[in-house]
Image (cartoon, one colour):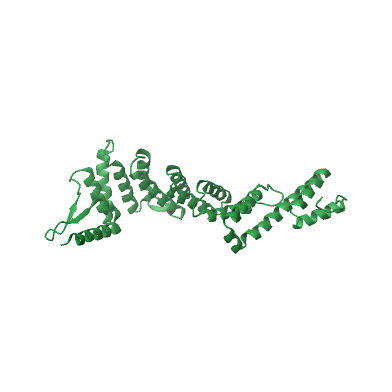
Length: 330
């Protein structure tokens, strides 16, 4: 057989194994030695070694036999957990995978946490963090923990904690970025707006070039606007929303123009800010502090000239004789 054809068939088989089971592909490699022997496994681990056990566990998991894999790994871990065997992190990771495949994701967390806590420099570490991310998403999407064998106990708090841990354990990574936006979106969907706004703010600082930035910015604006309770309350949310809106218009001018979102929101923010200043002026008048009231009304008219509150401010100043002859803007 020509060498080029043999090489092509080798690559084809390797790709097929990888698609069927990535774990199995890592432990088994095949070559076509000659036409009589056919495909022959190479790099097979020596029987009785830790590498052989890991390979066997991978095959069992790939073949849908997680209980057998879990028993195999547990027997080996019980005998070797106090040693320095380099296969330990992979063994814990695979046993966690076995628990997960058995629909016991909470038990799998103990093995993943062992990898993360005790073997931070191992190749299994990022894989364990990623597994916990997947479990966190399941919990936040409604999966409950088992209680006496029944999925009864809410696990939302644990899911949120796991997402925070992902960000702490792999800071700056793609996985941490996905965990951050997932957590922010989770809070937003639940209308926990203060938490959502804070999480979007953290996300925008940590990942300024993320593909999710536009959505995060829009939702942070929404969180700030929705938390504004009225002109008699603190207006810092409106100020922040205006700054964020300016950021959005500067960085996404096409989207802002097409949606009309910015124009409508800017009008609302302007009117709300004006109403808050009018409320402040009324308070000063109630305290008989006319100089402060007059100054506030003049600032209102200057800053928000097109607002309904500005028209009311003009009326109040005229009624009190505070409106200068040259007009409202002086």
